[in-house]
Length: 189
Image (tube, rainbow, N blue to C red):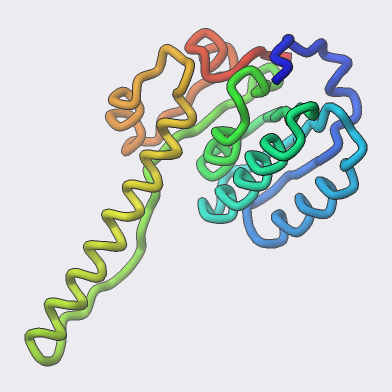
């Protein structure tokens, strides 16, 4: 894999331009543009987002991971612009650290996954136990997926998983230069 730092001119005409909420509409747009970039050796994916669905971010990220593995001569590069919050940071974590770039002044926001669910315990007692266990299993699985993403994000940086786990519950914001200094990204352009 080529990890030579890219010059700003490499970002002049990104192959994939995405902005807005990370949702299924963004995923469709992402796939369309990614497919149209099949002949590009360097595929720059530019994103601005205030967040969205973490599972959609993981789907897009898996597409990047899969394409990177299938075409090792191609380089898939992330360019974050203005705001990369929540699911956007999850998506960024799927890019190899030398392929992560932010524009000047961009902010990353890292936080824990959120859940909004009411658990109603009603009925036969064995059914109540099953419902409570099902919700607990959902929470535990979501934490495991979340922490896998955090581990991918910090790999090769000076940020530890423990630091992310400590700061993420209160929404951790990092400015582009701090993200570079901490080794979460390759450069600020």
